[in-house]
Image (cartoon, rainbow, N blue to C red; front, side):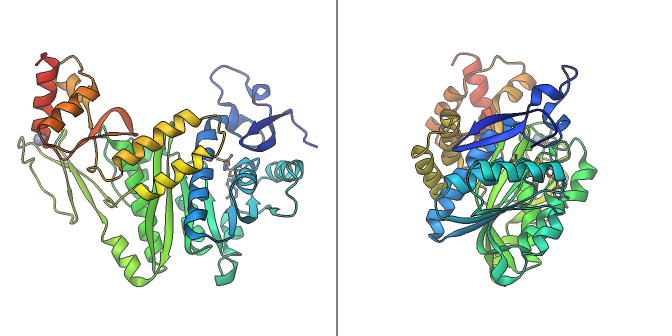
Length: 398
Ligand SMILES: C[S@@+](CC[C@H](N)C(=O)[O-])C[C@H]1O[C@@H](n2cnc3c(N)ncnc32)[C@H](O)[C@@H]1O
Ligand SMILES: [Zn+2]
């Protein structure tokens, strides 16, 4: 058994032995998951639920048996849930560099009676994945859920994922990705971030862009089926497709976002053209990228996830349904979003409801949608001037 205090929790269909987090807190500011000898974060249940729904939808899409790998598994909750909750999963390989984690993973595999299909390894994630890089050894799904950036593991994950397979990536290093530490973002993701009000979308696009560039080295293209920004992380699910043309097509989706901090204007460019001045107000523009300008959500895939959700009794059902409904709404929407609260702050206005702003812009003939990224956010191709005029009119009671 374990040499530290534990408790049993239930997540999805799995009963999991985890460190008793309350035993590792010595002062109120302690972050219990990182104090415990083995990692378990209850807050990431939503992340894991969405992984179950994504893989469930992917299995229906490809209609084949699946082999799955979780190279940074902690207590094993994610991989064990996948084995129990996703149809046609024939094998799951859990791995962690920590001996304590691996001991707990083995206990949890036995507890859930999965010793016939879930196997545990105790290696560095890159070494473990490299052992599965040969053609018939590769996995259908590799889930990279690390501390911080997934980039140190992306190359070996790509090599260990079969063609027409799926990769899931979590990035919790939002300070670099959202532009608080731009140099770290350039080092890790090869793109410049920007501290804009829509930095969480840029974070996802920087991660996707880095994945596309890594994949292209192996003549692999990416197709993002689902992604989300929740709490302290961004997460994406991409299909990995083989062929030089597919890889070239992915690289064509890379580009830049130009942003004016004076007036909120933004535009995209596929070339690194340093446009000096904003076409709306004449101020100097800032640039993010290279990053992924392509789609970050696939309507059909999200619809399949909604179906998967209906057939399960997930604790966070309502929250997931709301997130998926917003994701569906914004799947084909404009790049980036305006934040009504930020515009009102800048203009010194009381804030109208996002619903009213959306309705009024639609009357003016613009396509508009809400966004899961931000409750006060709207996605629209309308020029910033039209968005501002609409907000001003509503704030003045018109
Ligand atoms: C964020 S936790 C994983 C959480 C888990 N995926 C979940 O859903 O609960 C990251 C894990 O990676 C492990 N780890 C860190 N560096 C590693 C490496 N180089 N190779 C393998 N595991 C590593 C840590 O021990 C930790 O358990
Ligand atoms: Zn401007």
